Length: 468
Image 1 (cartoon, rainbow, N blue to C red):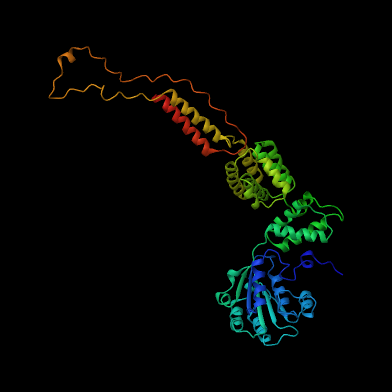
Image 2 (cartoon, helix red, strand yellow):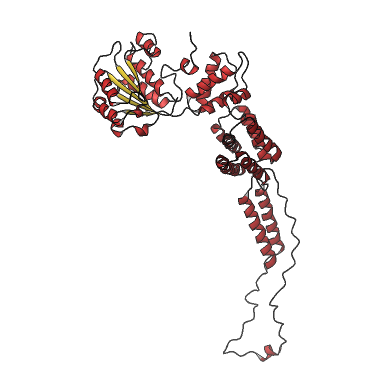
């Protein structure tokens, strides 16, 4: 017997076995239970998310000997034929190669035939958006009023190309990309059945490379298993080498070097990624994901639910950002976004990346500047206490100036007048301010917003000293 790929071997055969599409499977199951079976369905979504699988599961549910039922028996001839791909009542048509008006006319001529063994005659047209405009027009009348025993199921990755006249005659279901957690759980089940030892962190690397596609992730797992010796545990480095991914340990070392301000370690990580032949844009892209996860970890346990990493990686990030605040990580993320764009456009990406990393590490005035501003405010309060504002003389003691009707008193004029006040009084001597606190350099992100506030505070203190 020839080898059967994992993606085909472990394809779900019922709605319950499908992962990540509960909004679709639940609606279809309830429609079958209540007898509200529509004559035409449109399944939209990215590749490998379960469109064809759901269509075949629907065909089994409709033509099962016990059905229509959302839980087909899997034992009757109809269920076995659909599973084997040989059912005479399920016509699977490739819309990319059968897209002409003549192909649709030939299909339309067979619609009137009764089903062979089941209750419905089901037409599954994959990549239906590839049909030509005349072909769509030839299908309109049949699609609007098909025979009672006919069900159309269309699948497409580009719903925007489907004419509105078709969309108005079908029930549309949008399939989502499958969450990484669901893909990891499914891959773990397959690994157990295949007697393959692989860590959760490795499964997450495969799921992340699948980009929400279960089929792509299963194909990558198949590739990793084929690359590794039989009976040997598959580690993360093997997975990264097989799939061309950046080693997770290298990413963590680079991130820790950026946070610690270690330029040598950061540039060594870049050189290592370049040596292994990794695309530097891929390195910066995955580094952005690390910074994102680290920010959520730093902001508290409530946000760790959005971190799709293994427990070991989460703890490593928690240790790395223990002395850094979330605002500094946000600035690092913004700087890396700009650096990623520069690397993607640069004719010499390695030089641009190395200079960008060096610039990030060199920017020292960072995370703890809020404490520095607090000390400046305390110094300002002490200066104000040491130089209180002069009190005004009471109004009853102030001499009343003579008016025009009342001449100046001779006695008052005979007195020796006080010397006129000095027009340029000398400011009182203020105690020497304490030396400014040293700025800690704990992370390589430049805290310009807080630093500007500190400079403004220093300018305010200087002005207060000059004005007394």
